Image 1 (spheres, rainbow over the protein chains, first blue to last red):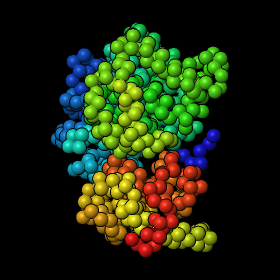
Image 2 (image 1 turned 90 degrees about the horizontal axis):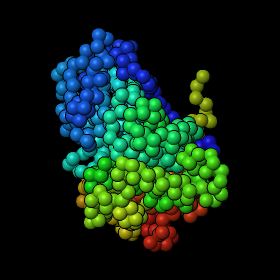
Image 3 (image 1 turned 135 degrees about the horizontal axis):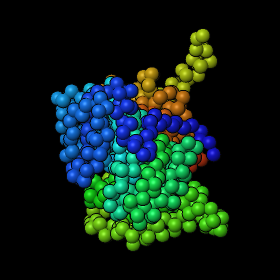
Image 4 (image 1 turned 30 degrees about the vertical axis):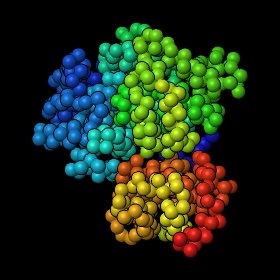
Length: 394
Length: 165
């Protein structure tokens, strides 16, 4: 059904496939850039992933002004402010982010501060409040297939003082270029491949079922789920399969476009809180919470979950499942997927496996009720409801 | 080509109605702060001197409420900590006349938000609950995800609101 009103935007140019990295300099030049600041993390530097990107710049006329690799797993305001200073000191004019959600979100924060010319990033907190500002060419190169951050309008940044993950939402956070090159995810360990893949699945499912859903985001979401069904388990069995790696990178990107335009709901609200309070890695939190939160939403979203059985389980399962049972079958399919990934990679199935303390449940639940993702979840959730979900997922 | 007279009249009418309803919304929140435990708990979590604004992009409407020394006051021309700015008065009109919920308005990108999202979430809960008292169930069923259980009868709250108690 067509919504009463919706908005949709994806201005990011996508380079996907073989030697995609080698085309970055041409794209940067077209955007008027000459000297790039490269952001990455220590692990990617050590295993040589960053070097592959730097090598792609050989003789192409774009200077690497500086590389910064001390980005922690949760991007924070302090790190962003430090990098802004480096960008200005080294007189860079563009940003290249190589990494997972944390590095790309850090880069979004840096770009936002420079582009808007502010000293304190908190001045920009909010939703769609910032204007276009000064254009800083920005290339995002994801090294996991899950966050979709390379095509989203959201930056999640940790506020250490309040121990909460802050959301900054604006269409002007979208990178200019997203580069999907199978060389970037080939070395990803199986467990992280599984967790980030489940994160992408969660993006697709929540974007298909939240209040902001629209026909365009729906098409991206279902296309992403199809790719995840066909490739996630297989790529966990054989991580060297470049075609499947690229397929998963595309699935993550498509799920990212979907949720950037229709947002995510209760699974992410609780997952963000679990990350902030108990330091559970985001992808693992999503994988653990997904079936429990879907059960919670079932009475309101059963029809939409039923529709998702087709891309998630394929046409034979869909056709052989009675209409009234499809929604539950969707949740069962996700549980089966989790079990298989658990056997293959050790992906956790419960919160107790992640040493989450029960005494933190109240704090997690309170934090989750203040997460922006909860506003677009079609079913209301109070602290007691979230504690119940956490208990079931324990 | 100029803007038509019909549009000008319609806009003026919508601004007027929005201002009147927002006046009562403010009274409603202040009344319920004293009479509803959940709204009280929510507002108590706001920092002292916290100011919330509802406005429109053309600034035709500037509604502000402040928590000061444990009480709520209607204020004017202050610098808000949280600002919800509707892109058009047509949508604010739909909201104040009970034809659109805040969650749906957010989902449709109908307003801009300046400030921390966690504060906005708390304010949205207060608005939703206040609407649960001020609007009849037939309306709230349509615009709220869940109709809140009233702790006191609607008529009592209206009485207190009109007498500013």
